[in-house]
Image (cartoon, rainbow, N blue to C red; front, top):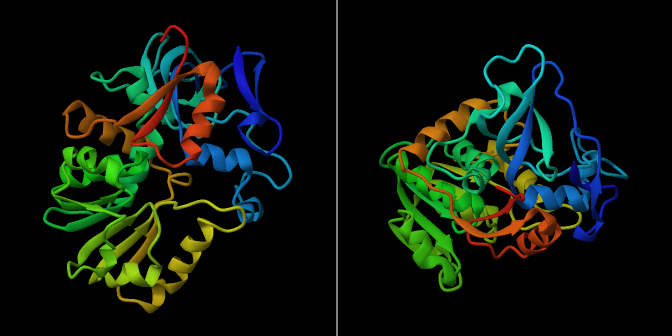
Length: 328
């Protein structure tokens, strides 16, 4: 099979299209023929090994060289074969998952417990846009309830577009913050109010929010807390990247302040989530009912994965960047 291999840290130029042996599913695994994947900050953080502090953390990308040779956190495709003990799937089944690696290859092995049938109303490219981004949004909004005032800072990206829709599906009143060129698109997702971040600082408003989903970063942690109700929640999802600390540094300082403030602070950590199957099942229900739908900025063919990453690294995509494989 063909796959883009990462041998050393660096730019997208380090990704090499290579022919390698097609993997065989072990017991409890499913071999998936990949029809589509997506590109996201998680991939290029691993590709560059940044922020550097992450290399020192348990479960990090590797100190001197990448631990993961085939990136691609999202997968949508068909079952090629199953390993011993797998009875829930059979060859030909259409599935999707968030294996956190392997999506940049034509085939990948996924634990059966992480696979979910692909939503019937989505194409493979649409389904590939869902797992990591929508799962992150769902985790961040786990305490959202009807009638809450929710603010999504960074509402036009992959996670943000799902967060606006999921919050609305949960009955919240959503205020969204994004750049001027995406105001209409974000409003179409169901936000009751959309703030142009270039013209207004949401932390300076009189309005107070029950939940602030902070994806884009920008305002200080203290300023974000002032935008919350006394018992509100400040939930961080990534933020602008940096070589040494960011976004990990911002997350750390926010969490350290938690015991000293009345508001709840949390980080939506999808990488260490153990409920991927249940969350994807929930998302499938929302997708098939039409309550949420993927927003796709643009698509690339498999051979242009490095270009897809270069584009995504610019941080300007409105929604998701997807990659489709030949014949899909």
